[in-house]
Image 1 (tube, each protein chain N blue to C red):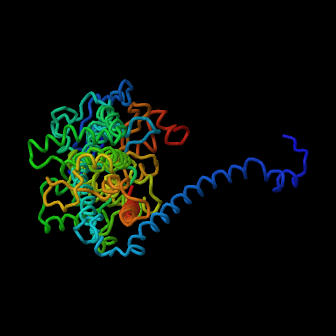
Image 2: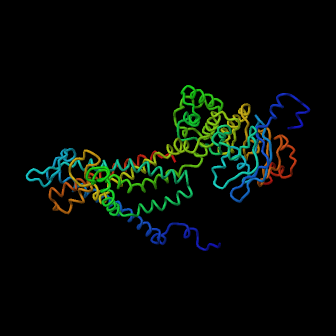
Image 3: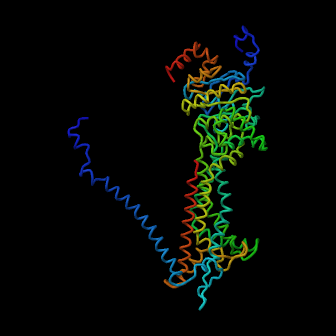
Length: 267
Length: 306
């Protein structure tokens, strides 16, 4: 909770400050090596949280632990808590398949399936038991519209997704994540493989999405973090160095390391 | 570094460089390629010329050869040259063995790449290599001593049958299919798996709906390569199939294939005789069909996505 809300107690901000995730003393190991050293942070609902830091600082590892994608890596394990709706999602009792439907993820490199645009979106919906064509059609249109891709692809929904440009492919990957109606969307450097124009479109889209979803984004692009995020977390060698409002991090950081990093002196 | 010679001597192409290693290496490599191409072309020409002689010189009807079920080349004065039972036999054992081996091989490949990539591969890899190493005569021998009596006593018929041939062949082509299918599955980019898992798909859903369809062109290539091997196999099949020239009416009937008829009869015919020439014609058919398999494989490979 920010002290700023006490001075200006308007309802909007109170809602915004509700937390969707509480991370408590999270440690992540790859075999014997510790990649994340006991971090604690609260992620706000309906906001964009940017994770920045040099390569290998543990920010992607942290992101991937939130929807248990690290389970796929042999030898990776997490200790501590990530509380989501009163449940520790790191618990072995969690059904990861169901969890990933609520906490979706978009990757650095666009990874559409080698199927049609339409099938890319209906793919996972069918697994959830949605089979009626009419319902599927509606969800496809709705999620493509939300991903600002509908107008570009509405006439060729049944052509291969691989025929799209890189930026369009990435927006398709976002669309298929939205189609699952998640509560949290994790973005792992979603626009680092894209040209500046596509990047701009993806950024606009992310800002648009925060009204409906809580978003965590890993980025190497300082401008991107400062443009779109509400809060920013700076990671260094597995530690969470500083976590604050984005404005504060980029104008008046508390830690010397943060200032050095964002001013480009290392990393 | 100090350069004493003028640029003209150092940098221009000269006679001196010409005959050293560069050109010699080129000639050796060209020669290797040329010998291979020449061998393939001459075998094709020879086989084509020998294979067509039965039709051109001996006046065997091509239509009869391809469509008649009656085969009796030594029936004088009215020899019969219907090779249909053998062509059918070849295709029958090929397709039937592929039907058994394809699911087994692809299943094993999925097990090795998706289910148990560490220990599954460690166990299955040597098993597959061992299967490749067993000579076909040994497969045939085992088929003859174990499989044929088993089929006779527990399933029916003489034991020498299409069924026995298809079982032996399916085990023989299993390593081919498994190896190529494993390569196909493991060359799929990991981002495809992650993309599907991140949407809340289970492992089985990911395998069935994402990975197998994405690898499909290569998986089909694996099956066709296995079929090509089955089509050309002679020895092991010959030992268990029964080698009768009648058209089989059930899977338990003895039968024969193009290859088994060639190996059985080539020693008993005189070179240049009509009986000998029709065997060459069968060899030519085998070659033509092999080319067809290669064309199919090339077409499938061109559709590869990853």
